[in-house]
Length: 363
Image (cartoon, rainbow, N blue to C red; front, side, top):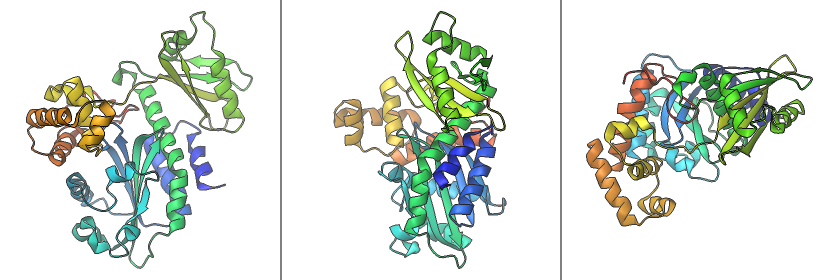
């Protein structure tokens, strides 16, 4: 079994986010040797971190190390920045390769990683259907050799599967905290004989949008059949009666022949209402802010939004004034420190659409 297949098997059961990260850490250590790992979820609307799991290093000082790395990332310009990686066709790279073997060319190595005796760093942005859901950073230390091209290729091959497993874990978290979302996903169980068992109230509502005759749509059985045939993360998207798409995600329930099907409404990934509301951003300013946070240039933002570069610059000027910053790097740093960091510090749960489920957590 290759790494990608092994990662997909993590979809079985109902493991939470921490369980998924522990399982992923164990799988990766067996496939790509390393000493320290940092596995973080990100908001796909901004590429800002919503939670972090670290293994292989003492907890003491971890928060300060994290802040240092994030601040360096916000400044931009260092080798293999996450936003830069996210824009690549293959969003995985090693620091040794990027610096031509001279790690001192990377500011984060000089500032932080040298003190941890790091000999190489492998970074990956975990992307599924062009949306980034997590970042993976692996370190080798001491006398360990650099990561090889084979190591990079192995992680790249499994990257999409890792992103999908994270997305599934975030959906499962939303099932447990339905009040955290205006339109939460729902879940139903399909038994081994094809009969539909438990159906949540939210799933009933989504099913009603597909068929108002009280019948379970055929797509549910199709997804369940695909899971039983060996696809542990089968998925289908179908138009509802209103014209909007409904997405179904299937996965096996470990140790049984039952299939769990999560149903949600397809929705665009945008900067959170919390961030937009806090700074009084207009709809267009929200769009520009999100793309700027993702590292898009003024010309790229203009192309994606269908407006002129001058209009983009004007929107950015208004956003800077509202947030109280003077540059893009300051904008991204301010958004992170004011909105993401306090919630992550309080243990808020990342949601499946980028923002947090704990809307009642005071920041």
